[in-house]
Each structure stands twice: as C-alpha cells, then as structure tokens.
Image (cartoon, rainbow, N blue to C red; front, side):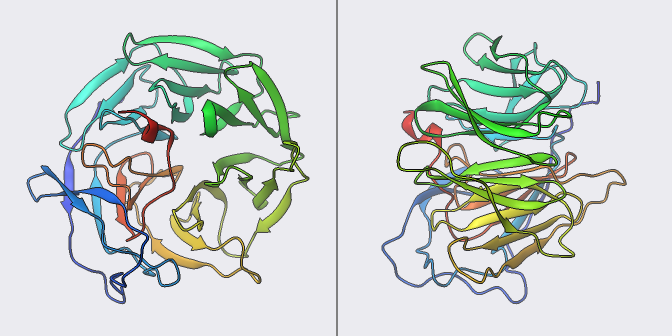
Length: 331
C-alpha cells in the first residue's frame, strides 16, 4: 500500500497578481471558516460577494500533501473523506491533519459522496457496484450491483444518487432513488462520462465526457430527462473531468490532463469562460481528477474549491461559496 502522507506544505495568503478582491456589498453572504498560520480554525463571515463581479483568480491558495484516489468529499464531522490507491481503506482527515480510519473494507474507489444522513456512497469500478459505508460502524454494503464501470457520483435532493457508467457498451448516466430503489436512465451515448454535478435547483445535470466536452441534461416538468446537449468543448482545453457549481450558478470545469480550472455562466450565450488557475504538479504521473467545495465544517471552507491531482490537494479561495450540499442538513 502506498504510505499515507499528510502534511501542510504551503499556507499561502498573498493575493496573486491581477486578482481583484471581492468586496462589493451584496445580500449574498455565507458563513465559513478561516485558518490561522498554525492550522487552527476560527469562525468568520465570508466577505460579501457579487455574482456579477467575481474575482478572476484565486484570492489565496494552499497546498496539502494528501494523496487520494480519483475522488473525495467532505462530511459533517469536519473531515475530508478519501481513499488511496491499492489501500483498501477509507480515511477521514480534519483540517489540522488528524487522520481517522472510517472503513477498512473499501477497494478500487472512484466517485465518493456523502449522503444527507452522513453515510458515504462510493463507486467501486472493479466490482461494478455502488456501495454505502456507515461511518459509525465502518460497514460497507452494496447499494447497486451489476454496473458497467461505475465512475462519477453526485448526490441530489433526498439522497437521489446520480452515477456514470464507463464500461464498454454501458457509457451512460443514471439516477438511483435510495428510498424507492428505483433506477432511471438520465442520458446515454457518451464516449466516457467522467464527471457529474447537479445545479442548486436540481433541474440540470452537467456531465463531462473525457473526450467530447461538457453536456447539460435538463429535467422536464414531469420529472423525466430531456436529451443531452453539448454545452462546452473549446479547442485546446484538453480532456474533461471534475465539475462543480457555486452559489451563483456558475459551472466550474477541471482539465483532466491540463490542470486548468475554468468558470463560466452556463445560462449566458455565447459561452465565455475564465481560466481561474493553471495548476502545476511536481509529479511525473498526475491526473487532475476531482474538485469539491468545502463543507464549512472544521476549517474546510465553503468559499474554497479543493482540487486533487491524486498526490496533493490544492485549496483555491475564490471569494464565492459553493452550492448547497447534502451535509448542510446535518447538525
């Protein structure tokens, strides 16, 4: 097993050149956490933000030496939840880098998402299953079986799960209702659906296809899904993977091989995107797989986008909080 390496490498607080602070008064505010140089946490109110005048570069960046598999998420206990390649263990780490073992029975993880009740849903690509881990007991049970290469995961309202399948002949996205055990096709005909995010109103699902670009799939009034539409595929961007949405409805895209983090408003035509960061890795083998907003618990801030290259976590303070998350409903 690759050794677990955790360490705060850089606590950068300087404003990058060309960054405009977001200080315009607005009613859009949120509560978040800020960190001290020693790694401790204090509660603060996020600076006011203006959805029409967001910063075009991170206000600050930190780097954590945390090795992950393809995905991670944040729970209500203030932990980043992740696994490591070949390790068979699901870990939690708080902002002060205290590590706990959540479950020793996981394997070959891809998507990782926390449910509203605190359980953790995981896509196991090798076994073709989506499982659910109870952090109170460490138990890992199958939720969905017989899948073709399950990869990306997203959790919507009432713990409805969205997941992609990437196996040959099964390249599609489905939703699964935990309460009713009903599975529904959202969209198919992809090359390799590699990232998912639902918007805050839960009526648009964005899907990144590694080679084709980013699609949107709109939910019809009757709850069915319309045909997918290609939304974003600029030349030179590279392949596509992780997606996120902020509180203003903007969509964020992570370049799978390029390390570019870009933002655009999906409702504005023609589409224009801003490259917020061109992340660099010091490792020879790196793949930019996942990014998530913090949970506002334990120092992992909601106005910070956390990005992994599987070797490190890059924390980009963007001056705007992320959308609502399932853990928000937990005390």
